[in-house]
Length: 435
Image 1 (cartoon, rainbow, N blue to C red):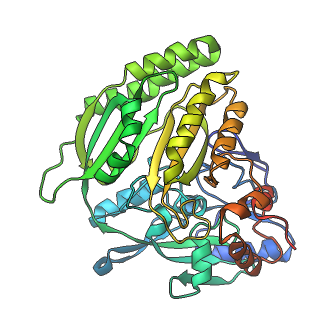
Image 2 (image 1 turned 90 degrees about the horizontal axis):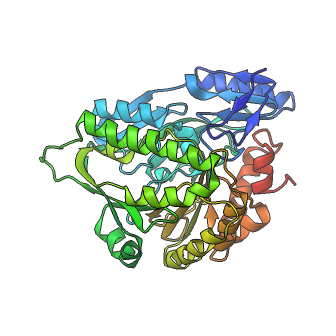
């Protein structure tokens, strides 16, 4: 028996059995054995979800030995990748093939299966999340059968499985639509928050990728604009020394130190927050796309993130800014704001509507429940949808009202897994009990 913890320390489990398959056939064999014996199983990746979505009490399938690109369709710029492959490894292997993913989030520690199953996304008003780049999935269902789905082959399963919560089966392979490798020009700088909010729609429309971080108690936001470097232009990455200073020393070591001081002496959090906002620095560089998308996160935190209709963003931020000063416990971490285009994936947070994403964080070990509850109330009033891998309190009754295809998803899940082999307490809560 081995105790498992997720990255943030918000979930843990003591599974009775941990399976480490090295092939799709071995994954199917494990699932069949679990089902025959009336047990439950959950697939494990990197444990980077903040929710208990990966908690396995009976059996766990550790996919970290099932990695790498399995096939390449060079003519169509497509790759098929094994489900335990981390996004970091995938980016490196795509580099070697002269390929890249169109859009990425800012963390690359997740496995591709975990990222797909929880709806990982990046930012870009004209772009969708990672799931929109999937053209085919292979899964092992509860009866041990291996099935393939795509837009043309079992389209209802495909609409469900691209953000499947691990409730439909164990993903074995993901086929991704890539494109020729490209570089991004990055501009990161502090700007007055009021100016950022006033120009938000324009900034989101003018840039390929736009986001900002609001530091509570400060007047400035850290604004990030990433745009494609023209073909043939040579990238100018940060020097190793500047990269180490800006990202490792300032964003991790120094910021982590401020957070630890604030945790030890809460009355210092507000002045430290004002200091952090005032101390933000500017930088411009260009580099391979994934090196711009991804940021190393060395400071541990807890997080809740909701997608709201784009037109609701300003209202939500006004109420959130009013909430923070009223909290009993101060907030040590910034709020992240991003955008995404509408998609047609049943449980995607951007299903059917252009969306803005608001993520609230708190330094690990500091009180967060009042803050997160107030945030949930604000976004709930505009039909906010929680990121499946980040902290929220909603159940099936609430979620059914926010997802037009919620019942379609549940029907597919019950067809693929009628006995609940792939369920755990989190899945039971968000999808409702089995009939």
